[in-house]
Length: 269
Image 1: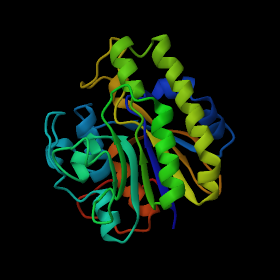
Image 2: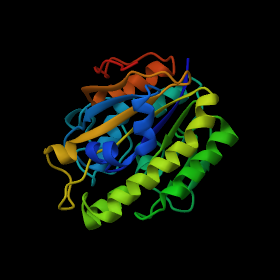
Image 3: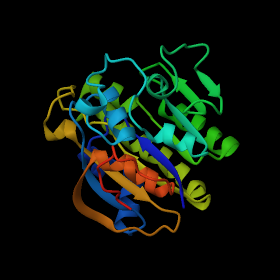
Image 4: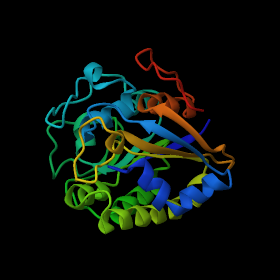
């Protein structure tokens, strides 16, 4: 059994990760990590894909069909299932995750920091600023990791989405931030691996050169998946394309938990 850290880098394109995430690509090159291409679910929008990543079902099934649907998840999801199984859950994420898995509507005073065993995200640090610095998101996650030793920790940096929508995926601003984020992940990895965590790095969707997402083209639909395990052995670059709907059952498999019938995707480990 392994504990899991899932990093969902908002709007990280597959090609941008391959070109800019030098440390993760190094781990792939020396086969200390496994890399897949992922086909993101449609529509390629944030809230629907947050839900797809955690329920393993598509938008027409989970019902979060655009970013304006503000309600709790009604499907079996990783957070709810982990809490029910007695696992410890934590997240350093954008506030929409609080609305999906904890409470609606989000209250910036009551919900910004939560530590409550009755909630699906038991230890949550939520932000609302689109330009929240990635280093602050990772620092909050590192605090949660050390303080609560969660079985499942979600980290959701959002600055790439903000820069991509402002400047486009080929901009200096976006491409530099990919490199910055790779460094933040690299700093987190050694201690987390030693502590027995499997780390997965992926994205909800990509971003186009002309600053949009939501459609069906490869630039917004093709995202990466890196998997690093505590034994530091990997398959390198598989060059295989997998479904975003396989991530939730993979997390549950790693947590040694049963996979509900609603999740049809085959685990990747």
